[in-house]
Length: 181
Image (cartoon, rainbow, N blue to C red; front, side):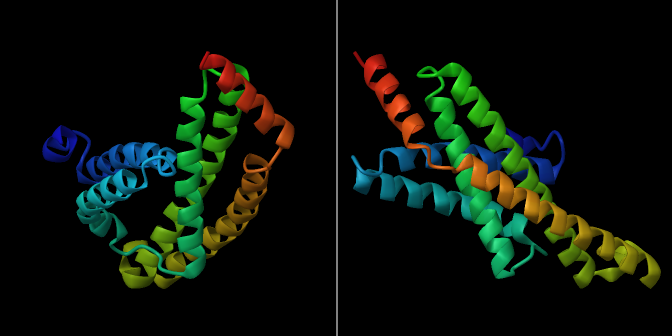
Protein backbone atom coordinates (compact mmCIF):
# COMPACT_ATOMS: atom_id res chain seq x y z
CA UNK A 1 0.00 0.00 0.00
CA UNK A 2 2.78 2.42 0.91
CA UNK A 3 4.70 1.82 -2.32
CA UNK A 4 1.56 2.39 -4.38
CA UNK A 5 0.67 5.52 -2.43
CA UNK A 6 4.14 7.10 -2.13
CA UNK A 7 5.63 5.80 -5.42
CA UNK A 8 9.26 6.31 -4.30
CA UNK A 9 10.68 4.97 -7.59
CA UNK A 10 7.91 6.30 -9.83
CA UNK A 11 4.47 5.16 -10.83
CA UNK A 12 5.55 2.32 -13.13
CA UNK A 13 7.84 0.77 -10.53
CA UNK A 14 5.12 1.14 -7.88
CA UNK A 15 2.65 -0.68 -10.12
CA UNK A 16 5.21 -3.41 -10.80
CA UNK A 17 5.93 -3.86 -7.07
CA UNK A 18 2.22 -3.83 -6.24
CA UNK A 19 1.49 -6.54 -8.79
CA UNK A 20 4.36 -8.66 -7.46
CA UNK A 21 2.93 -8.44 -3.95
CA UNK A 22 -0.37 -9.90 -5.18
CA UNK A 23 1.31 -12.81 -6.97
CA UNK A 24 2.86 -14.31 -3.85
CA UNK A 25 -0.34 -15.07 -1.92
CA UNK A 26 -2.13 -16.23 -5.08
CA UNK A 27 0.69 -18.69 -5.71
CA UNK A 28 0.48 -19.91 -2.12
CA UNK A 29 -3.31 -20.34 -2.41
CA UNK A 30 -2.80 -22.55 -5.48
CA UNK A 31 -0.84 -24.96 -3.29
CA UNK A 32 -3.84 -25.49 -0.99
CA UNK A 33 -6.45 -25.67 -3.74
CA UNK A 34 -6.95 -29.44 -3.45
CA UNK A 35 -7.45 -29.31 0.34
CA UNK A 36 -9.44 -26.07 0.57
CA UNK A 37 -10.94 -25.46 -2.87
CA UNK A 38 -13.67 -23.04 -1.77
CA UNK A 39 -11.26 -20.94 0.30
CA UNK A 40 -8.73 -20.90 -2.53
CA UNK A 41 -11.36 -19.91 -5.07
CA UNK A 42 -12.73 -17.09 -2.88
CA UNK A 43 -9.31 -15.70 -1.96
CA UNK A 44 -8.01 -15.95 -5.51
CA UNK A 45 -11.05 -14.02 -6.79
CA UNK A 46 -10.69 -11.38 -4.07
CA UNK A 47 -7.00 -10.75 -4.78
CA UNK A 48 -7.60 -10.88 -8.56
CA UNK A 49 -10.29 -8.20 -8.26
CA UNK A 50 -8.05 -5.96 -6.18
CA UNK A 51 -5.18 -6.37 -8.64
CA UNK A 52 -7.37 -5.81 -11.71
CA UNK A 53 -6.98 -2.01 -11.59
CA UNK A 54 -3.20 -2.36 -11.58
CA UNK A 55 -3.43 -4.76 -14.52
CA UNK A 56 -5.41 -2.23 -16.52
CA UNK A 57 -2.67 0.36 -16.11
CA UNK A 58 0.08 -2.14 -16.78
CA UNK A 59 -1.60 -3.51 -19.91
CA UNK A 60 -1.98 -0.04 -21.59
CA UNK A 61 -0.35 -0.50 -25.11
CA UNK A 62 0.56 -4.18 -24.33
CA UNK A 63 0.69 -6.82 -27.02
CA UNK A 64 -2.54 -8.80 -27.38
CA UNK A 65 -1.47 -11.61 -29.72
CA UNK A 66 -2.16 -15.19 -28.73
CA UNK A 67 1.54 -15.97 -28.59
CA UNK A 68 2.25 -13.04 -26.27
CA UNK A 69 -0.60 -14.13 -23.99
CA UNK A 70 0.75 -17.68 -23.88
CA UNK A 71 4.25 -16.45 -23.08
CA UNK A 72 2.89 -14.22 -20.29
CA UNK A 73 0.99 -17.22 -18.91
CA UNK A 74 4.17 -19.31 -19.05
CA UNK A 75 5.98 -16.56 -17.17
CA UNK A 76 3.29 -16.48 -14.47
CA UNK A 77 3.43 -20.25 -14.01
CA UNK A 78 7.24 -20.17 -13.88
CA UNK A 79 7.05 -17.47 -11.19
CA UNK A 80 4.61 -19.67 -9.23
CA UNK A 81 6.94 -22.63 -9.62
CA UNK A 82 9.91 -20.60 -8.37
CA UNK A 83 7.96 -19.46 -5.30
CA UNK A 84 6.90 -23.05 -4.62
CA UNK A 85 10.50 -24.20 -4.86
CA UNK A 86 11.32 -21.57 -2.25
CA UNK A 87 8.78 -23.17 0.08
CA UNK A 88 10.53 -26.51 -0.41
CA UNK A 89 14.08 -25.17 -0.02
CA UNK A 90 14.63 -26.82 3.38
CA UNK A 91 13.88 -30.30 2.01
CA UNK A 92 16.88 -30.29 -0.34
CA UNK A 93 18.64 -26.90 -0.22
CA UNK A 94 21.19 -27.36 -2.99
CA UNK A 95 18.74 -28.85 -5.48
CA UNK A 96 15.98 -26.33 -4.72
CA UNK A 97 18.42 -23.41 -5.04
CA UNK A 98 19.65 -24.72 -8.38
CA UNK A 99 16.11 -25.22 -9.67
CA UNK A 100 15.09 -21.76 -8.42
CA UNK A 101 18.07 -20.17 -10.21
CA UNK A 102 17.23 -22.04 -13.43
CA UNK A 103 13.59 -20.96 -13.15
CA UNK A 104 14.57 -17.33 -12.47
CA UNK A 105 16.60 -17.32 -15.68
CA UNK A 106 13.49 -18.52 -17.55
CA UNK A 107 11.36 -15.83 -15.90
CA UNK A 108 13.93 -13.18 -16.82
CA UNK A 109 14.03 -14.25 -20.48
CA UNK A 110 10.22 -14.23 -20.62
CA UNK A 111 10.24 -10.79 -18.97
CA UNK A 112 12.56 -9.45 -21.66
CA UNK A 113 10.28 -10.90 -24.31
CA UNK A 114 7.30 -9.18 -22.72
CA UNK A 115 9.19 -5.89 -22.55
CA UNK A 116 10.04 -6.09 -26.26
CA UNK A 117 6.44 -6.96 -27.14
CA UNK A 118 5.24 -3.97 -25.15
CA UNK A 119 7.79 -1.69 -26.79
CA UNK A 120 6.96 -2.81 -30.35
CA UNK A 121 3.26 -2.44 -29.65
CA UNK A 122 3.81 1.07 -28.29
CA UNK A 123 5.91 2.06 -31.31
CA UNK A 124 3.23 0.69 -33.64
CA UNK A 125 0.60 2.80 -31.86
CA UNK A 126 2.75 5.92 -31.38
CA UNK A 127 5.52 5.79 -34.02
CA UNK A 128 6.74 9.31 -33.24
CA UNK A 129 8.24 7.94 -30.00
CA UNK A 130 10.95 6.21 -32.05
CA UNK A 131 11.87 9.21 -34.17
CA UNK A 132 11.82 9.27 -37.94
CA UNK A 133 10.72 6.34 -40.11
CA UNK A 134 14.32 5.14 -40.56
CA UNK A 135 14.82 4.93 -36.78
CA UNK A 136 11.43 3.25 -36.35
CA UNK A 137 12.25 0.58 -38.92
CA UNK A 138 15.70 -0.01 -37.46
CA UNK A 139 14.37 -0.27 -33.89
CA UNK A 140 11.51 -2.61 -34.84
CA UNK A 141 13.83 -4.81 -36.89
CA UNK A 142 16.28 -5.12 -34.00
CA UNK A 143 13.45 -5.85 -31.56
CA UNK A 144 11.93 -8.54 -33.77
CA UNK A 145 15.31 -10.22 -34.28
CA UNK A 146 15.94 -10.22 -30.54
CA UNK A 147 12.43 -11.55 -29.85
CA UNK A 148 13.07 -14.52 -32.13
CA UNK A 149 16.27 -15.36 -30.24
CA UNK A 150 14.56 -14.94 -26.86
CA UNK A 151 11.58 -17.12 -27.89
CA UNK A 152 13.92 -19.97 -28.77
CA UNK A 153 15.88 -19.52 -25.55
CA UNK A 154 12.66 -19.36 -23.48
CA UNK A 155 11.31 -22.57 -24.97
CA UNK A 156 14.60 -24.38 -24.36
CA UNK A 157 14.76 -23.12 -20.78
CA UNK A 158 11.09 -24.01 -20.16
CA UNK A 159 11.70 -27.56 -21.39
CA UNK A 160 14.60 -27.90 -18.95
CA UNK A 161 12.78 -26.27 -16.01
CA UNK A 162 9.61 -28.27 -16.38
CA UNK A 163 11.26 -31.57 -17.30
CA UNK A 164 9.45 -34.26 -15.36
CA UNK A 165 12.05 -36.42 -13.63
CA UNK A 166 10.26 -39.16 -11.64
CA UNK A 167 13.37 -39.95 -9.59
CA UNK A 168 13.70 -36.35 -8.49
CA UNK A 169 10.00 -36.09 -7.67
CA UNK A 170 10.22 -39.24 -5.53
CA UNK A 171 13.30 -37.90 -3.72
CA UNK A 172 11.51 -34.62 -2.90
CA UNK A 173 8.49 -36.55 -1.66
CA UNK A 174 10.65 -38.67 0.66
CA UNK A 175 12.51 -35.62 1.97
CA UNK A 176 9.23 -33.80 2.58
CA UNK A 177 7.78 -36.77 4.49
CA UNK A 178 10.98 -37.07 6.53
CA UNK A 179 10.90 -33.36 7.37
CA UNK A 180 7.34 -33.77 8.65
CA UNK A 181 8.29 -36.38 11.23
